[in-house]
Image (cartoon, rainbow, N blue to C red):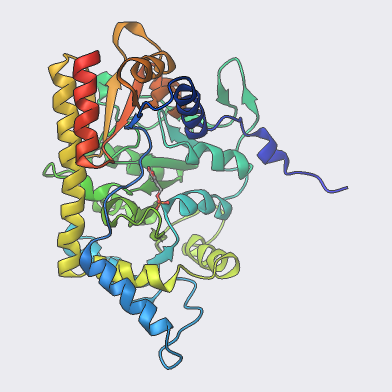
Length: 408
Ligand code: PLP
């Protein structure tokens, strides 16, 4: 008799966003004809920009002619695109890594989850609290944890790295040993960014503990504060102990187009195999289980990295950052306590009057018809906060902020 994966069975049901959607639907059924102003999911809303759209149209023309048609590409991605990403790291961050370190994918979420498979099942994961839920769930599904402890409301076998307002929601390395450390800066959900010194503490920890950092830089283009690193490889020595995951979703608007990359340097060390083995195994994994990202997406990605493409992407990023500034200003005028929203599309708002995340979610929906995301869905330390997303049309953001100002 076939058996379902025991690891998947350990996953707690009620993933955050379906529950948010369920409550919005229930509210709409009770309030027919009323609009919900959505500041909840981190989904982009603005059109693909001209240079990128043109490149994808052109790729479709090539595919439509048998003389220029192409089928499968390299599993690791188009060489030209890998070279362009490597050049982007070199020119914008001063990070010089061989092109062979870069692997093109269909997005950062898949990479963040799939990368688990190249680690021994005995590896102990560490996650930021609060954090993007994929890191925890993929650690559980990948067999790196024990079962869920309902008393602690946490998985056995995961090291949770707590954070609070006093630390600016930037964690410090754990006291315990961990083997895989997930870090995300600019952070989803808190919008926090880490300084070089703060990241260096994690690189030092990784060297000391022979651990590997998985650095999710999906929002790096939102950083405008001088001196804040965009890549973990801006920290000396990170090449030996860090993997980085990037995305075209939040700067080029590729949430639906799908394109990302991972960086697994040949210098990356492990405890039980020669240097370079993680790189070789990731390459092996991609060649075996993945047939490459769409050639249309890759053409778009290449255009996004051209001079004109970069300008367009940054104007898209600045549009969402403009939304974030409008939200932050509105919240400030209400005298509420908030974080993030400067180097990030997310604003992290403390619930007033000691309300829990879900209580405040319900109150915002009921009173202002505004939907946000409860912070508790991202981990224990998220309780008492909500995440406000700046992804939306400007006019909708303005309406939502007006509603908050009027009804709260
Ligand atoms: N990483 C973080 C931190 C995210 O917030 C998201 C999406 O919201 C992703 C990765 C997913 O990126 P992609 O669309 O490239 O899969």
